[in-house]
Image (cartoon, rainbow, N blue to C red; front, side):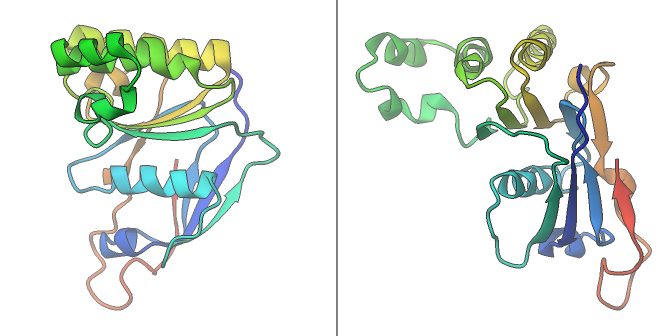
Length: 204
């Protein structure tokens, strides 16, 4: 895998300050296949969405950041939330595609998710950035391993950059993935003052 240096420095963020994260947070985005790990409520989805806004250079209230791409060329940026963006809940998106609508009506949630990795995501342009929130949702252990293989193929053959917030041990334990564990970066000893502002920490 080709590793190109890229960092996101989060200067201010209301959620992470509330969770007692030190500011600034420096998130290493250099690896092409990154997994965000942490307990429920640790900020995985929040960080994933924050990265999405930064990559799209969007301004969000009370969120200040600096993105250092070091000249890395970023392609199309897509955020996929397995719960909110489930195609089975949005059949109107496939008006004019009767075969797809029939598949959505008869397939299981897991089968629909697999079809996204097998057919939909590979159609994105080369060099795309794919942000996934709990991509393992509804997938068996064997299919989680299959999804990991598909993600690695997207990185190797189409130069994708992929970041996923996940609880899957199969995605987290793979030697090809770079894991950022948010549980290790919460400052639980800060009890007074402007929470999250003391000191610095690096998320790597």
